[in-house]
Amino acid sequence: MEFTKEYYEDLLYKYLLPFITLYDNSESSIIIPNEIATSYEVNTMRLESFSRSLLGWSFLKGYEDVKRIILSMIKNGVNCNCNKYWGKLHNNDQKIVEMFPILLFCIENKILFEENFNSQDKQNLQNWFFQINEVQVPHNNWQFFIILVNRFLQLLDLEYSKERSDQAFSIIEDMYLGDGWYSDGKTQQRDYYIPFAFHYYALLYSKYTPEDNRSDKFLHRSKLFAQSFKLFFSKEGNALAFGRSLTYKFAQVAFWAIYSDFLDDEYELSYIKGIINRNLTWWQSQNIIDSNGFLNIGYSYHNQFMTEYYNAKGSSYWCLKLFIILINKSDRFFKITPLEFHSKERKELIPALFSTLITHNGHSYLFMNGQKSNNQFGNTEAKYEKFLYSTICAPCVSRSLYGIENLACDNSLVVQIGNTLLVRKSCKIIKIDRDIMISKWIISKDISISSYIFPDAPYHYRIHVVKTNQKLYLYDFGSAIKRDSQLSATTTNNIAICHNQNQASAIYTLKDQGFANICNCSPNVNIQFPNVVIPYTCIQYARGIHYVIDCCYNNTTPININKSSPKKIEIRNKYIFYNGKQYKLEVPLSENSSLYSKLIGFTRRIKLIINYFK
Image (cartoon, rainbow, N blue to C red; front, side, top):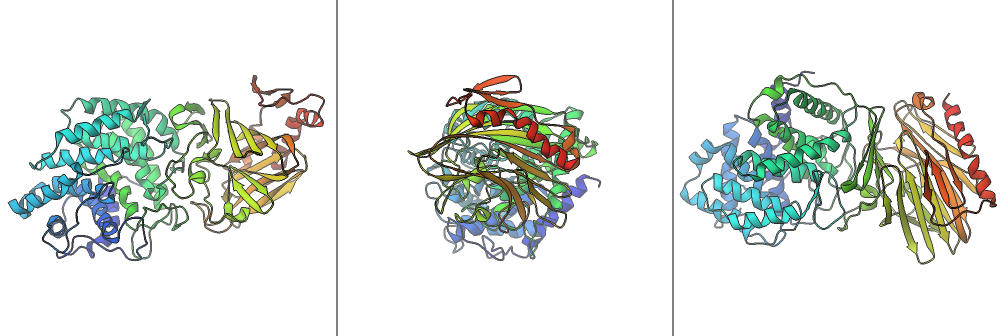
């Protein structure tokens, strides 16, 4: 496929085409068919749909007849004497988020704006947008909206607040962590809001304010961030799926699009073009368009289990941020040949992300330890607190608290006490290191589980230390894979193995009152595939202190399994010995215990997994 500038323009127009019939000179917002409820009022939801579509029209030249209607709608929205007035802003208003695309549209269509807005229209525009300086705005990535709105008002020769912008810059500085990473407010969340919000908005400001010394600083930070972010993308083009707001889809590569405008090095541009092109190709192969031609709510298909309470029908159109590439200062990007995917095996600790990121066989493995959400977004434990996220299969979310099929806890733990199922979340972080991640899940005063995770690919080890004063079942889940006609699933010798044509997953534990099995998950719990299975182990524990070692496997096909085998791991008294290093256990294990003798032979038994695929 030839990824010319015309290709990007045609693709953008394809996404904008369904909106055209919804624009109306007498309106100020639009209603996308099959609306869904959100945490904010209906009128704001419809403004969002209108505003985010304007991102596309900001980057697409021509179509002046459509743009004149849009300008009429903007005039209605900012006119307090019109019954289509967008209304006053209140503190932390969702409308704050939707402001900058409207002004960006006016700037990128400046000639039409001047032709259609008289002095009173401009005054109305100024009055409505200036409200952002008079309300409370959350201390997170939203601070950039204050900066962008004021800068765009200035570029339109309207009143703006330098003081309010400087305050916002100061707040953003307090959120900078180093190495190109930000904290999205006073939280441990680190997700795609760093690239498609913090860095994107910083570079957008720099694009329109190159004379500001801050622009050099923002570009430097983006260069630092790019070094780790480039590892998020697989050879197939898809990116690691984790965190909230994944319904924004190919906004995942919006950072690369705007970053490319600041680069001159041909190799870097070629590398970035490869990432963008592969990601776009992957997204075009997903079921992301509904029967009306609009983007659906979900990740790879329509799925409301994974969406946030602030996701409306128009929310997904933040993905149009990608198309800023069409207004780069030159067309050089489109003339460069994209670099083919090539990646050495990497293992990198990313402290700000609380993670170790490994690349193997063209895929990415993100081992997480410490991500939490201060906000009660849906399924936060699934989006931030699994042991592992990989590009081989996106994660699952839960649809019910009852039944492991509904919980769908890939790469996580579940404890069953009686008929109650509890999912691992809000753990105490003991250690985050390149080679080991230790956390403690305190379930109650009577039950806690310390987990020692040894990041590696395609195999990794998990050791769980269970302290309990009551009987329980411990479930440890491996990685999910698609359930299709090619699926093969086997449980034998306490090993659960499943694979299809493109994915393989397995988990093995010692025979300590436990068993292994395959969980046939309920439909639509996985955000990438409507139907998946997950291998898991389950052990019943009585009162006391218990240890278990699990070995997990996750790769693209079982053919590659015999090319790499797990490293030796063993426990002697109070230490874990793995890969030439020793790690102290929370509770010593007596060498006289029967469990100790079983652990010594563990690596010999694990070869059963390899032999199965041979």
